[in-house]
Amino acid sequence: MNTNSRPMSQSFDLLPIAERIQQYRDMADAMLLKAKATVDPDLVVQFLSMATSWHALAQQLETGNLDPESFPPIPKADDTVQDPDQG
Image (tube, rainbow, N blue to C red; front, top):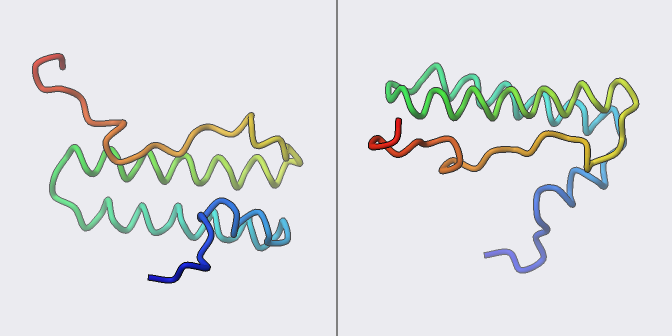
C-alpha cells in the first residue's frame, strides 16, 4: 500500500479547475458504465445516483460555484440501499 497517497478529494483539489471538471465528468461516465454492466437493480440505482452527483459537481464548477459546502454529497454505496422491511 502506498503510504504517500492522499484522499481522492485532496488530489482533485490540487488540479486546475478545467482538469478537475474533466475528472468529475470521467467519474460520472465510469459510474454510468458500471450501471450499464450491472444487473442488480439496487446497484444500478446507486451507480446512477453517484453519476448524477459527479455530474452536478462538474456543472457547479463550470458555473463558478466553487464553494464545496454547496456541492451535493457523493453517496456511499450503502447510503442508497433501503432496508427491504422499510421500503
